[in-house]
Length: 174
Image (cartoon, rainbow, N blue to C red; front, side):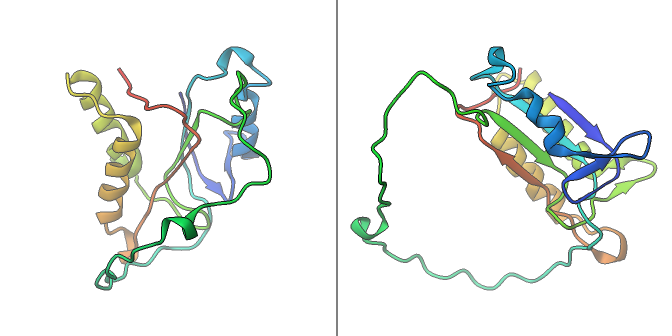
């Protein structure tokens, strides 16, 4: 697990020296080809940093559209090559990147209490680890998304966290 709390811009954050560090440069050294002993093991990165200068607006949702029936034959995807089950692991498998905000937008923090994203992340992770009924990380991140998205920040703006993942198994933190 790697946690970074910093300032940032699109696809990067700032180091203590002020230099930009690409998020990809932090995650890539942990790929299966570079560290074979990590193949099939989860690699978690949580980044609290702005990903742009834009401020997110809130909006009132429209009524949901009714569900549509989709013919199963029409929804199938075609492939040129058949699927072959093997013993290899894709290089980018089993990563989770938890971002405090979506691309192009600011992430807010309170100078006294800190980042709302980190607060909303730590609370359920700690609670789940101490409980006999443990939640998986994706369920936790969905709740974090919901709680952070409810907030109204400076200038009545919003924040939407963004988890990205290639996990291949359910992950429960103990």
